[in-house]
Length: 136
Image (cartoon, rainbow, N blue to C red; front, side):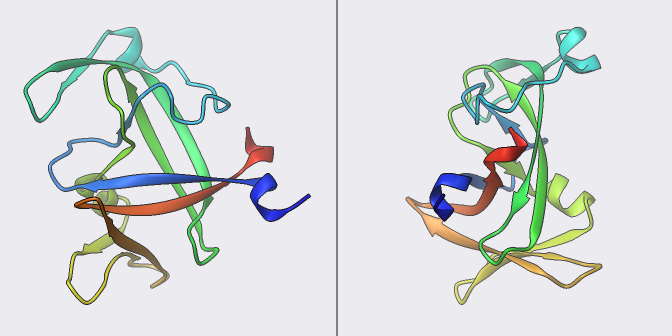
Protein backbone atom coordinates (compact mmCIF):
# COMPACT_ATOMS: atom_id res chain seq x y z
CA UNK A 1 0.00 0.00 0.00
CA UNK A 2 1.43 3.38 -1.02
CA UNK A 3 1.93 6.42 1.20
CA UNK A 4 -1.05 8.28 -0.29
CA UNK A 5 -3.32 5.29 0.32
CA UNK A 6 -2.44 5.17 4.03
CA UNK A 7 -2.68 8.89 4.84
CA UNK A 8 -5.22 11.61 4.16
CA UNK A 9 -4.12 15.24 3.81
CA UNK A 10 -6.19 17.81 5.66
CA UNK A 11 -5.74 21.53 5.02
CA UNK A 12 -6.45 23.87 7.91
CA UNK A 13 -6.82 27.65 7.57
CA UNK A 14 -5.18 29.65 10.36
CA UNK A 15 -7.69 32.26 11.52
CA UNK A 16 -6.58 35.06 13.83
CA UNK A 17 -10.17 36.17 14.41
CA UNK A 18 -11.71 32.79 15.24
CA UNK A 19 -12.72 32.17 18.84
CA UNK A 20 -12.45 28.39 18.49
CA UNK A 21 -11.27 25.72 16.05
CA UNK A 22 -14.24 24.93 13.83
CA UNK A 23 -15.05 22.73 10.86
CA UNK A 24 -18.06 21.69 8.86
CA UNK A 25 -19.57 18.24 9.08
CA UNK A 26 -17.78 17.28 5.85
CA UNK A 27 -14.33 17.17 7.48
CA UNK A 28 -13.27 13.53 7.27
CA UNK A 29 -16.69 11.98 7.65
CA UNK A 30 -14.90 8.77 8.62
CA UNK A 31 -13.95 10.39 11.94
CA UNK A 32 -16.97 10.28 14.15
CA UNK A 33 -18.43 13.43 15.60
CA UNK A 34 -18.66 13.28 19.38
CA UNK A 35 -21.51 14.85 21.27
CA UNK A 36 -20.45 17.46 23.84
CA UNK A 37 -22.16 19.56 26.50
CA UNK A 38 -22.11 22.46 24.04
CA UNK A 39 -23.89 20.45 21.34
CA UNK A 40 -26.40 18.96 23.82
CA UNK A 41 -27.16 22.49 25.08
CA UNK A 42 -27.54 23.78 21.50
CA UNK A 43 -24.81 26.40 21.99
CA UNK A 44 -23.72 28.44 19.01
CA UNK A 45 -21.02 30.66 17.55
CA UNK A 46 -21.21 33.75 15.38
CA UNK A 47 -19.38 33.82 12.07
CA UNK A 48 -17.37 36.82 10.89
CA UNK A 49 -20.50 37.92 9.00
CA UNK A 50 -22.50 37.77 12.27
CA UNK A 51 -24.42 34.64 11.26
CA UNK A 52 -25.34 32.26 14.09
CA UNK A 53 -24.10 28.66 13.62
CA UNK A 54 -24.92 25.87 16.04
CA UNK A 55 -22.37 23.61 17.68
CA UNK A 56 -23.04 20.05 16.49
CA UNK A 57 -20.29 18.30 18.50
CA UNK A 58 -16.56 17.89 18.06
CA UNK A 59 -14.02 15.92 16.05
CA UNK A 60 -10.62 15.03 17.47
CA UNK A 61 -8.09 14.88 14.63
CA UNK A 62 -4.64 13.39 15.29
CA UNK A 63 -1.85 12.96 12.79
CA UNK A 64 1.39 14.68 11.84
CA UNK A 65 2.59 17.73 9.96
CA UNK A 66 4.57 17.74 6.69
CA UNK A 67 7.79 17.17 8.67
CA UNK A 68 6.38 14.06 10.39
CA UNK A 69 5.98 15.79 13.77
CA UNK A 70 2.89 14.58 15.68
CA UNK A 71 0.06 17.10 15.56
CA UNK A 72 -3.52 17.19 16.74
CA UNK A 73 -6.47 19.51 16.86
CA UNK A 74 -9.97 19.41 18.30
CA UNK A 75 -12.56 20.98 15.99
CA UNK A 76 -15.98 22.14 17.07
CA UNK A 77 -18.31 20.97 14.31
CA UNK A 78 -20.66 23.71 13.18
CA UNK A 79 -23.24 24.09 10.46
CA UNK A 80 -22.66 26.22 7.34
CA UNK A 81 -18.84 26.20 7.58
CA UNK A 82 -16.91 25.09 4.49
CA UNK A 83 -13.30 25.31 5.72
CA UNK A 84 -11.36 23.87 8.61
CA UNK A 85 -10.43 26.88 10.75
CA UNK A 86 -7.74 26.85 13.44
CA UNK A 87 -8.04 29.64 15.97
CA UNK A 88 -4.75 31.43 16.69
CA UNK A 89 -6.05 31.94 20.23
CA UNK A 90 -6.57 28.18 20.70
CA UNK A 91 -3.20 27.37 19.10
CA UNK A 92 -1.47 29.73 21.57
CA UNK A 93 -3.47 28.39 24.54
CA UNK A 94 -2.19 24.91 23.62
CA UNK A 95 1.42 26.01 24.25
CA UNK A 96 2.43 27.26 20.83
CA UNK A 97 3.42 30.53 19.25
CA UNK A 98 2.25 31.58 15.79
CA UNK A 99 4.49 33.62 13.50
CA UNK A 100 3.30 35.31 10.31
CA UNK A 101 6.25 36.64 8.33
CA UNK A 102 7.03 37.29 4.67
CA UNK A 103 10.17 35.16 4.98
CA UNK A 104 8.31 32.17 6.47
CA UNK A 105 5.32 31.60 8.71
CA UNK A 106 4.98 28.78 11.23
CA UNK A 107 3.50 27.42 14.45
CA UNK A 108 6.18 26.62 17.05
CA UNK A 109 5.60 24.39 20.03
CA UNK A 110 7.16 26.22 22.99
CA UNK A 111 8.11 23.03 24.87
CA UNK A 112 9.71 21.06 22.03
CA UNK A 113 10.71 23.86 19.67
CA UNK A 114 9.27 21.84 16.77
CA UNK A 115 7.56 23.80 14.02
CA UNK A 116 4.67 23.34 11.65
CA UNK A 117 5.05 25.29 8.43
CA UNK A 118 2.29 27.72 7.48
CA UNK A 119 1.99 28.58 3.81
CA UNK A 120 -0.07 31.06 1.84
CA UNK A 121 -2.73 29.64 -0.44
CA UNK A 122 -5.42 31.64 -2.22
CA UNK A 123 -4.88 34.61 0.09
CA UNK A 124 -5.12 32.54 3.29
CA UNK A 125 -2.56 31.09 5.67
CA UNK A 126 -2.87 27.29 5.85
CA UNK A 127 -1.08 24.33 7.34
CA UNK A 128 -1.37 20.69 6.40
CA UNK A 129 -1.98 17.71 8.62
CA UNK A 130 -1.65 14.10 7.58
CA UNK A 131 -4.08 11.72 9.29
CA UNK A 132 -3.42 7.99 9.14
CA UNK A 133 -6.51 6.22 7.81
CA UNK A 134 -6.18 3.53 10.49
CA UNK A 135 -7.29 6.19 13.00
CA UNK A 136 -10.68 6.37 11.29
